Length: 63
Image (cartoon, rainbow, N blue to C red; front, side):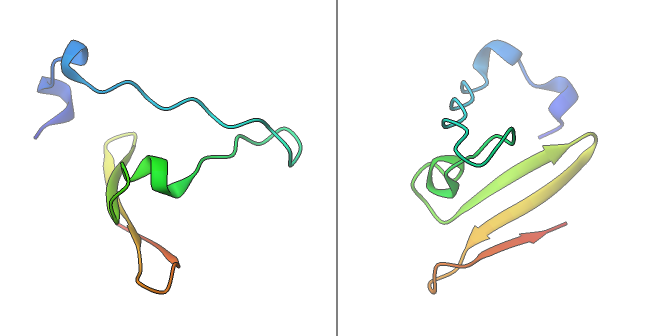
């Protein structure tokens, strides 16, 4: 789906960032990003990336 054509009101709300125990960088739980599943899409500008949690509990981010 083209992000530019999506209805912003239909978009799910972003989860809040966790408290910042590691300085000033936001900390996000990968399980929250994936909605409890094993994969999610991440947008950066006009690029779409795939985030995947492996069976071994590692993260893979691909373009």
